[in-house]
Amino acid sequence: PTDDEGNLLAHLIALGEDVQHLEAERTNLAVEHVGDGGSGSLRLFPAGTRGKARVFGRRVSTWEFTDVDGVEVQVSLAVDGAGHLYELEVWKTNHGRLLSFPSFDDRA
Image 1 (spheres, rainbow, N blue to C red):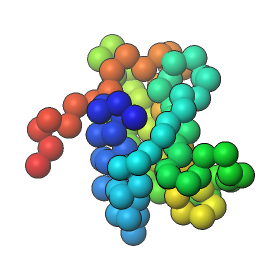
Image 2: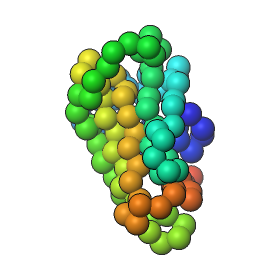
Image 3: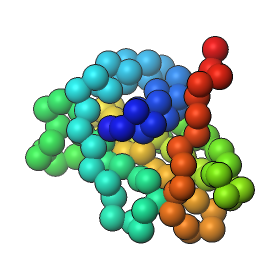
Image 4: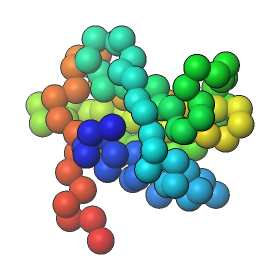
C-alpha cells in the first residue's frame, strides 16, 4: 500500500475493537485496487493469503472524512472469515473518484 493507504489502514485498525493484532499484518501486505472507477477501495492480502479462497468475515471499523472537493467519503475495514485483513472499502457519496486521502499529520 501507499503511505496514504497505510495511514488510513492504521487509523481504521486503531478504531476497531480487539483487532490491534491486524497492525502486524500491515508490515507484509499486498494490495489490489478494486475495479470500481477510482473510488480507492482495496483488496488486502496479508502474507500467505494471496491465491487462497477467502470470504468476507465482518466489518471491524468504519469512518467518514471529507474529500478535498467537499464531498463526504465513507470508509470501512473488513476482515475475512479467518480474521485476516480482507478489504478497505471506500465509498464517495457522489459515487465519484477519491481525490485525496485524509491527512493524519496532526494525530497524537
